[in-house]
Length: 125
Image (cartoon, rainbow, N blue to C red):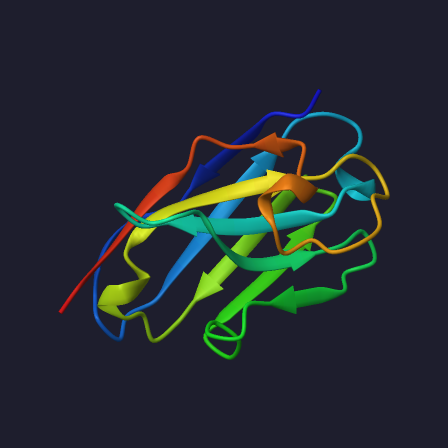
């Protein structure tokens, strides 16, 4: 069983930056692919970025260049660095983890087995 706890959300002005963290419990973190998703009010949960156990990353096209996903296996933590934030980035951001060494696409919610509770990011104009 894996538990995920996000932190680092908050209120920021447009153009600002935030770094989200997701701390994972359990011994399978280093073999899991990790992902970030977000959900704005009234919208479906949306893929943001993913990083696999080898450190390979993949981003949603609209976020590539502004968002960077990384992981620290020694700390069982995955990060999402966000720069040049826009009001449309306002959402609850969720961290997710797959079962160990799951292959295939990771840009959809059903690819993930574990989810955090989410952290609110609000970008004011």
